[in-house]
Length: 190
Image (cartoon, rainbow, N blue to C red; front, side):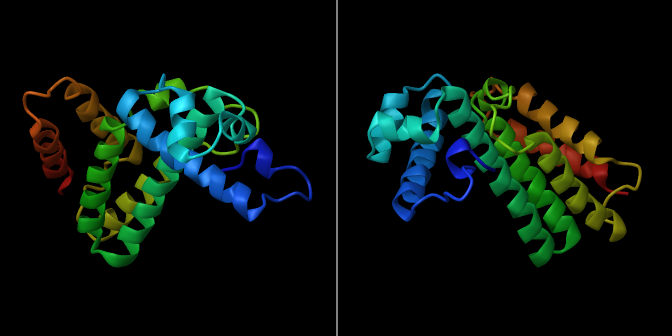
């Protein structure tokens, strides 16, 4: 993931600028999770302990900040897939990643839709990264005989997003998403 302030030829970010950028991203993740994509940028700067000018120096538009937060979330999700693949049996890795993806999809708070238009300077395709992560996890489970051979990564993504959308308004039944995902997992078994 790159932004304009990281791509100036020969001018990597100073350590303090890099720390400020990370603080802004952390505050934005928290604030967008609480208030959605229309959260106050001044509130984000306040929580990060920086001035609005610092926020805008790193992220010149709301769109750039939203896209950076979404890309950061997706990078973390995809890195989790790789950690699961390296440390868990294939069926556990698949289940763990599907649960993490469901949490990502249900915790989106409108960021995906708000960041659909990729701003100039952001070199990261969230959809491709997620598809490639699920392909890696699913392939391991299929090789181990823990997942049906006819299931595709696209199938899994659609099913989990469907669960997330179907349970979006199910505040009265917080366990519903998990139960529906368990049905999906049962259907994956050969």
